[in-house]
Length: 391
Image (cartoon, rainbow, N blue to C red; front, side, top):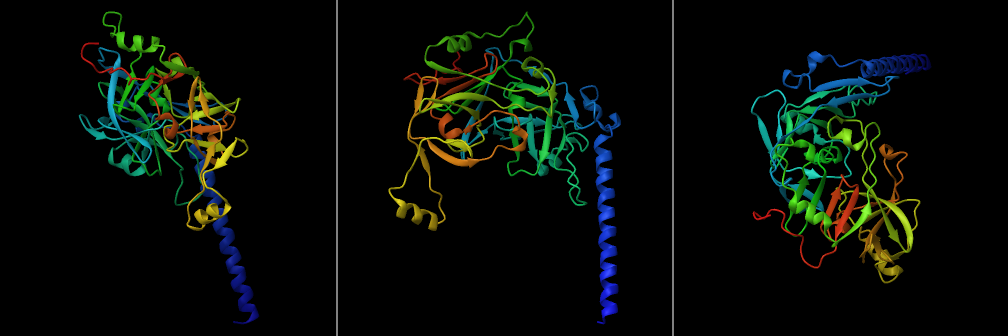
């Protein structure tokens, strides 16, 4: 090839590259325009008309999906209970049901993960979203990636409902994403209830049904719940929980996809206080933020043993040198994974560490959203059986 041919080839390559850049820029501009365009109401299935509305912020930087979910069902004792299993350090519920939005009398039994660290009501994989015919809107929660092959980071919308035991919320907000787990229940769905009691011994999850679900003529019997709350066999830690746009009371009536909820408590380590995120989606004991220092010791005897672990592709574990305290409860032999960087979604949220299933599963716990406390059972005996017929 002559020098002139090389020059012409280079010029053609430059021209093609410039054209590609222009096309990509045009695509991004179109994506940005789509992000600011309201979703036509005609796109919402007739079954969901009147239950879903779209709201733009003043600067159109964010589009919110409002889902007016109604709680349906009857829980005469103020509880709805689901059995669960612990698999790979995750709480896997049995017997939950999702309802399709536009196909009458169509439902699917699912085994969702309960993840208090997950944002949103229901997070489902893209594959499940297609299977359930979820109504999804690319304009809601839009995050353009400016690539022709993957225009949206995730899609938001709604399913016909989510039934948990004897109580269902209809419809339910849903976010589809490229995730490994088929379906996850997040904090927004849990906030529809007054709280959740996790009985690890019986492998039962009790959602405490909010009082306002019932009319004055048929209030639920809350004898067992109130007696349990009054027990002195709990240690209690104050619960911090955020809502960027609504109060906790309002969350029970209107669900907004773009809200952030991070349940946090104060823990004590070596006489120092730290803020920890309660995350049932984390299988370990504690995940420590990168810039926070705790009194840690290695679980290997010497440097040579640590080097041998690393050479075999295994990670050296570290343990707390002092007990981890939640209220008056002391947790010994706590494993710590260091180097955590909070995700971008947690910007502005004060948190030093993540408290996972490894610690939370050592005693029954009660995430009480009504009283805004986390209760940890300290009784020598098992938690009272809340499903007894004589309560």
